[in-house]
Image (cartoon, rainbow, N blue to C red):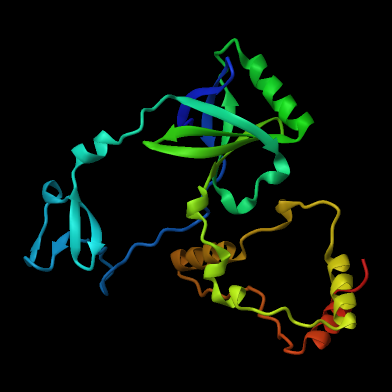
Length: 262
């Protein structure tokens, strides 16, 4: 059962909608511990290489590296001075067309649920309907864990999902990637273009169903761990890598033939 990680309001104009936030995703990962050769879990110490001693937690401070091995110490009192006031409100600043949200800006996602104890749940339903009918998303700000976050609210199924967005200065310019910035437009053969379009058509579906996909690595890892626990020999059933042709035209022809007609 999911637990709420934040309670507050959606605020725009004079309208306030009591809501709760729930994580919309979860990490499907396995955590491994590091062990010594005899199977004992390794512990880590906070060690000062200059003084050659372990540093207790009470002595540890935060430092910002100004230059190589030169730091300025940032005290807790310093950080408290710039601590952003928590308003417990998702303040909507504007509404924009949903196509304006580029996925590259999305960091994390949360479900926004109406407060069942509130008499103002009608306003939540109204916001969902308006966002759906107008095909718009709401852009706003909210303070979570002492950080001011830029967010986007959009309708999702019967409710609302909130995306934490990256600020523009957090997105690396594509020009910093030399393989892209310095690349030249390759001359494409008409037959290559035609076969490429045909291949895309053959792989196309009218609707995307994410349920058709799963993490094969995680499935194999689960089988491996289960075999280890039971003392059995693990045999991988993962598909082998396909041979890749270096000739684009030949690769396109072979791909179209392998996929076949829908």
